[in-house]
Image (cartoon, rainbow, N blue to C red; front, side):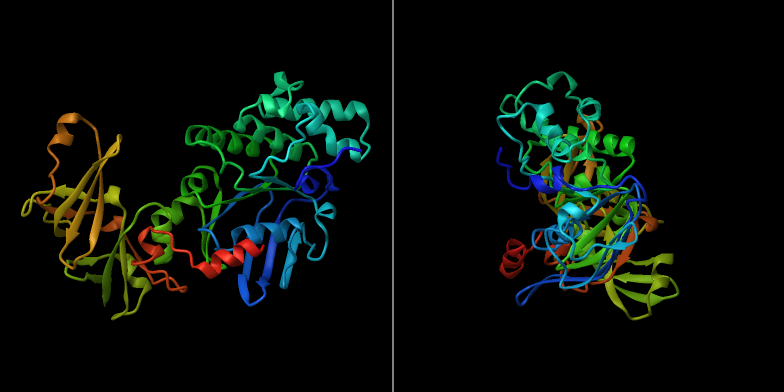
Length: 406
């Protein structure tokens, strides 16, 4: 009998059911590794047919959470429900899930169709049905003409498509994807992001996706759970997470954010430290005197010469410290009065306009529309604007050890 590659069990031998739905719920789920808590009392609801992404830096608990849904780890406390049934304690092969890993785990001596058919043969599915389902899934992932080839004859992206077909052929209620595109180059990864979303919409099953790549999450997801130190800091659709982050950590981890220290004045007014007082309905969510941060995304800032900024818009003075050409845009680094540094992204609409941008040492006025400013509180896990909240992912050695312990 042929030996199986590592991790093939969940993808090829899971007993799945065709009835019911693929909704997933976590209730008070905690996972401890010795004295380290990798996942800390989280509650989560994932709808049937949703493309749901868990996003965060290494050590945040996202992979551990996925592994508890799959059955590779059991929770220390809490319930894992799939289609309303608590599956905590059940092994992977008894759950209506399949998993696609970053490591493709394909049999090198088998053809693509043999790899995809492997699990069905073990379950003694009739031969005619195996042929039909294997052919259907290879066509779905764009490899119908390559069925007789072997994995070594394929690119990394094609091998990952085979792994996806092998998981889908078992008709799971929930497909779990653990950073499946992480080993691919940038161009191929971007192409497969679009393909994965297309396939998910076509098959209509629940996808639970784990990644640390913000662009992947924004591109493919119906909703995103941003995780930090074992907890979910925000769970919302991509636009909400990007435009209206709930904490300094989320603001800094999703894209690039400018975080300005501020104080609520009352009457829908917020005062930027060493800057203007801005009237915004967003301030009504907080109490007068409360300290927080105002978030303005780099692409929302406009650059002008000092004294020439729009009088009807809030603004702040600064000095350009850097100017970087990024192709589609130019990125300016601007030092403002309180010694903070703001990032500005200016689209390169024309070469002439780009050459007019101020260079290093130039004094500038940065302004923005009040509705483009969003107020956030300090992350409950303490990752503020000088840490992960500033867009730099900071992961402690203890966190990394805990994630490795999974």
